[in-house]
Length: 189
Image (cartoon, rainbow, N blue to C red):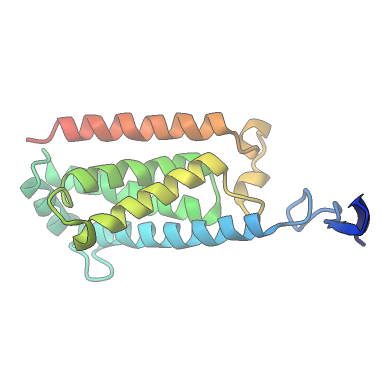
């Protein structure tokens, strides 16, 4: 059932019904579906990159090959750093897909991508590889700030403060990502 109201003569507007969607709250909007699509696209991409590092999936180097590459990039303990990056990408990506602890998942993705931008892609041209990690980082940052939308497991968490998407949560998570990424970049040789 929709309610029709008139804001000015001859200009009816249809208000969306407020009867609750499948996970509670108001009826979903295009914003909720758009956020779901963005989360799934970014999250699966990052989880796949993490799987390359951790398990050698999708023609990835696994921990050994990725560790050697990280050592080449100047990171100390390359295999350990490969494990950290792989876990951040894999778990952060899955968190985004599921909409579970979304600000933290987004922070994990943003932190690893900041490192990728300033190490592996530092000398790439704009259309030579630099743009993909940049766009993924910006998209993950946007998800940290907006929250996951209605179709997310965050809405089912038992602690109310974790269920609600708040700008302060997103800003804090992004601050954590930037500081963590800076520390990791500073310890490179």
